[in-house]
Image (tube, rainbow, N blue to C red; front, side, top):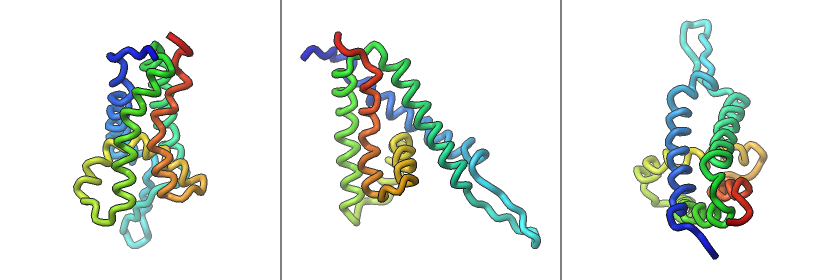
Length: 157
C-alpha cells in the first residue's frame, strides 16, 4: 500500500473549505434565488422558500463541489489515496452526527457552530430527504459524500 503522506489532508481540507463556501453562498446570495417575497393586500410581506428552487440550488452546489474536487483538486491522486484522505474526514463527521442524533442533550451552540462545516454534505442530505429518505438516515448517509471523489482518482500510482 503506497500512499503519499502529503496527500492525506487534501480531501478533508477541500471538503471543509467547500462546506464553508457553500454555507456563505446559501446564507447570503442564495436567498436571492430561492426565497419568495409576496406582498399581501394589507401591505404586509410574506416570506417563504420555493421548494423546487431550493432543490435546484442545493443540487447545483453539491454537483459543483463534486466536479471541481474530482476534476481539479484530486485528479493527480490515486483512488486509494482519495479513499484514505476521505476516511480521515468521514469518520469524525460521522461520529459527531451520530452523537447529535443519539444524544438528546447535545449542546445547541456546538451544533450551530458545526453547521457551517456540514453544509456541503447537508446539501446531499437535503437531496436525499426530497427522495423520501428519512432525515436521520439521509443525514448519516450524507456524511459519506467525500467518498464520492474516489471514481475521479487514478487507478494506480
